[in-house]
Figure 1: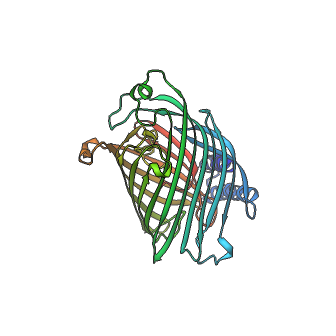
Figure 2 (figure 1 turned 90 degrees about the horizontal axis):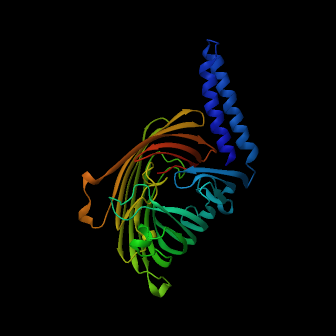
Figure 3 (figure 1 turned 30 degrees about the vertical axis):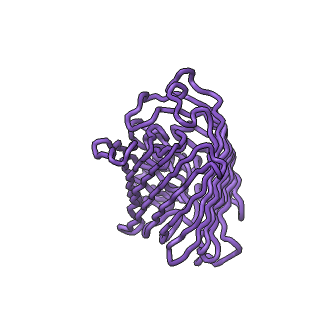
Length: 379
């Protein structure tokens, strides 16, 4: 992803050049900007191969700090089915080490086949991951959190079949094992001893129903993406903890003007049974409520409402303005408007290919100012 950072630097430099030229003609300014965008496009084309792109990886978020590594990514269509019929599939493989001393290996296959009637998603993640624990609840005992470290392996397998236009159903399997090897002595994690404080093993089966009629999977401007999911973790599947988790993810995309659109999301998570603290419903992070540390607020139930306004600026460059609010609760009746936590921000986008795959740089304000640098849209 080093190429993404180069492109962003070129973009910022380009704006400086465009608006500092002493030449008074707009034509000269436009030519200068065009040259820089042409150079950015050439960098993307140079590093991207016909099938695979092998690139340095650069990520940034409050949870990881700066992360450096290598990534291979392939965007393809299964068995050569028609471009106008089949959605693109992706296979990224990433090895990353962060300035927070976190090491992560991930690979995730997102596969469309049979003229979009079959969908498969599988993810493998192996990590050595120092992280932070803040406690449980919408009001937490520490605003700074305390450190702990875990080595974990995670896998999920998800298959869905299209039964009628836009409606998919199918099973899901999840497995995760954690070895927590470093805790603060007598801290809030060791002292409070929430379920999973000394490690965990979970294994569960579930089912999902999804309505998906987006016009583009990377950069939708109209349509719906709605998913209802249920996961059950049981001892007969090899799980040390017995619990159920239900999620509702509702998204609507509205095109307003040419190259401008709204994206709206209403996300809910409900947990019953004896769930380890790692699998309680939580908010924060790069996907839900940017500007809040991921997992800073966690409890049995959580909800997040998000909205983005996206618009094109020039060629492959776009801007996003976003806002969100959310909370966690022990009981459903505890959800209150006055308990909502809010945030907002602005983001830059650079389109990498004709499919609409973007790199993004977001600046968010919640209970902290935070920066996020990565791939794909949030909603």
